[in-house]
Amino acid sequence: MATILSAQSTDVNVNRVTPELFRKYPTVADFAAITPEQLEPDVRSTGFFRNKSKSVVGAAKRVVSEFGGQVPDDMERLLTLPGVARKTANVVLGSWFGKAEGVVVDTHVTRIARRLELTRNTDAPKIEQDLMKVIPREKWILFAHQIIWHGRKLCIARRPKCVDCALENICHAGDKTWTTVEVHKSAKL
Ligand code: SF4
Image (tube, rainbow, N blue to C red):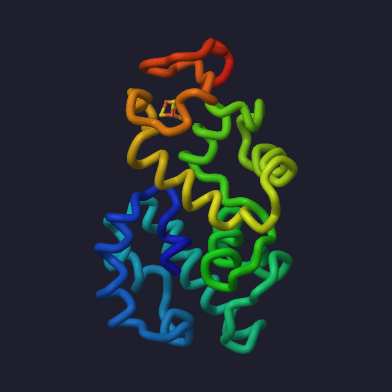
């Protein structure tokens, strides 16, 4: 539920909402028993709350009716849940079930994969395929966490802190703020 709510939102925003949300609706059956309209006030601050309410309640209903109340642990069935595309499915499979079925591609992974020239693509499914080719499978889960953390702390969107970055001498990003190596103009978003 939290992963569905995290779309187009920050973790801070989602984490502000979920403790009370899970107190109010402690099981998937509780979410399945309400209407999206009932959920809306509780998730309003995460943005896009009407769609997210529909997705959360719809996913809960499907988990209860089709999957015996258990969140599925494979990509194919996860993708049948409302509000779940590959990114959300990869988060759940990797971080909850420990299964490396793909690589999470969010805004940080997109930006940094392009800066580090691990991909030339701009859309998430193609970026994911490129990363799956160059990153060893046993590192897929951790890689996304590491890159997202790197994107929050150092390799930020507007003014990356290149002077403090351990990857500086292998990074040719076109929008670096400091460099000791040749810069490749196309290596950026
Ligand atoms: S050197 Fe700069 S642009 Fe390259 S990965 Fe580090 S912070 Fe990002």
